[in-house]
Image 1 (cartoon, rainbow, N blue to C red):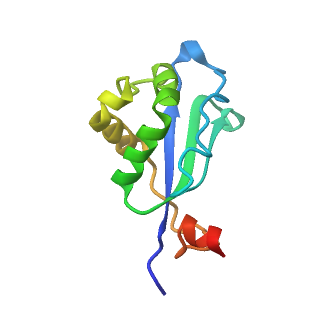
Image 2 (image 1 turned 60 degrees about the horizontal axis):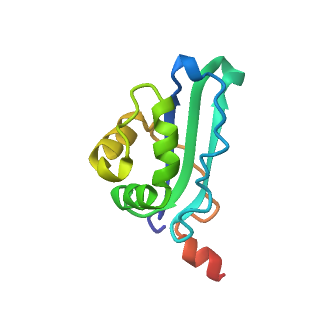
Length: 131
């Protein structure tokens, strides 16, 4: 079987207590990387007793660092508005603090479960769109 092309990112974000219940609707990430991003969403973990914790989940193609740089380039305004709400968030503006963004994501990313499921693990976004 060919190696998976798709990779998961599960970024745990702790809100500052003073902004508990903040609106995450403005963190629009789902359409910003149509060439390598399969999907992205932000969910609150309040229903499992973590009212100040969010989980940013994405599935992307290819190299992690290339993905993060594309994410910065396409969504820097959203991150600049959102990261000041996060405990120990990286400095903004993210365009001027790329390495800090990379370091923050690596530190707060929880690895994929051994049972990470992808319907088409060896197909890129482009391959799926061309089918």
